[in-house]
Image 1 (cartoon, rainbow, N blue to C red):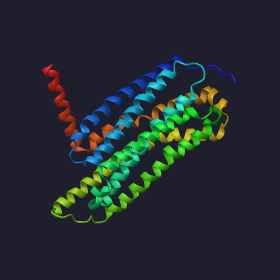
Image 2 (cartoon, rainbow, N blue to C red):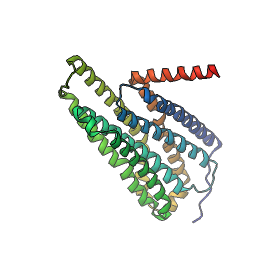
Image 3 (cartoon, rainbow, N blue to C red):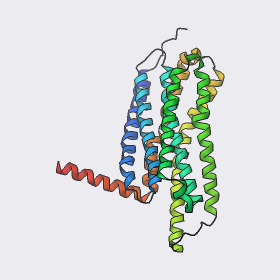
Image 4 (cartoon, rainbow, N blue to C red):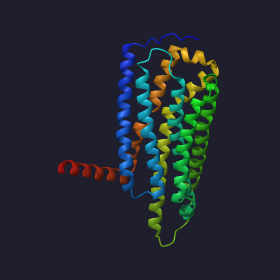
Amino acid sequence: MACPRYDLSITFIATLRTVCCISGILAVVENLGVLLAVRKIHSLRSTARHFMASLAAAELLAGFIANLYFSLILSRKDSLPLKTESAIWFFTTTSVTFNLSNVALDRYIAITSPLQYHNRMTSTRSLILIMFSWCFALLGATMMYVVPEENLVEMWIHSDIISVFIPFCIIAFCYFRIYQGTKNTFPVRENITEAQQMAETKRQRKTANTFRIITGLFIFFFMPCFIFNCMYVFHQPDINVIKCNSFHRTIWIWIAVISYFSAVCDPWVYAIRMRDFRIALKELFQSMCRILHLS
């Protein structure tokens, strides 16, 4: 089936490229700052820092790869490479949602079972969870190239369930149990005063709420993309119709670009909510200034 050439206005192309460029640069710079500063955040346990760093890396790659891709495809006037687009969507979405699940699971264990946290969430187990998230995202993205193009619609449905629905069920369960747990009295630790126990409880709650906000931002920006994808898949099952519909493809690109804004917003949530993160960023900035001054 021959596809008609897309009729995209110069204004639309210029606007979207500008948005992609700004969003991509901010996502890379901000999340790179998170990666460099996370090791200096002493209020988080080492395993929690691993999960936070992995999430920042996932958002950095998502913001960079997706915005670069959408900038490049605007130069194409013919049908878009759906396999490549599907692979990028699955990799970026899955890497972020699975890392969000890891963070939620870590916070769930830290708050509901603080005395058993070090036994249940060891460095080895945290690294296994992180490696599984990245390997599964890469495997799913590779499968998009193996599946025949006429079966891509079915693959989109399955990928929505695997990369979105299942992780958010895990996240919803963890934060619901965290909410229940924070209403109860935490078990008293040994060699710790009541005031220190209350401060630790408050800090754990604030950390959990911080990552809950980050998850909420991802859902807020991603939900239009998810809804549009589901509606379009179930109403237009023919892959040729999906590939050649200029109007719907234009809407999809806009929604998809907006869905990656969470990679830009999340570092600001860290900065606003976490005092240790602001201190770490300040130390990082001062170190960079000293290096530049010496050079």
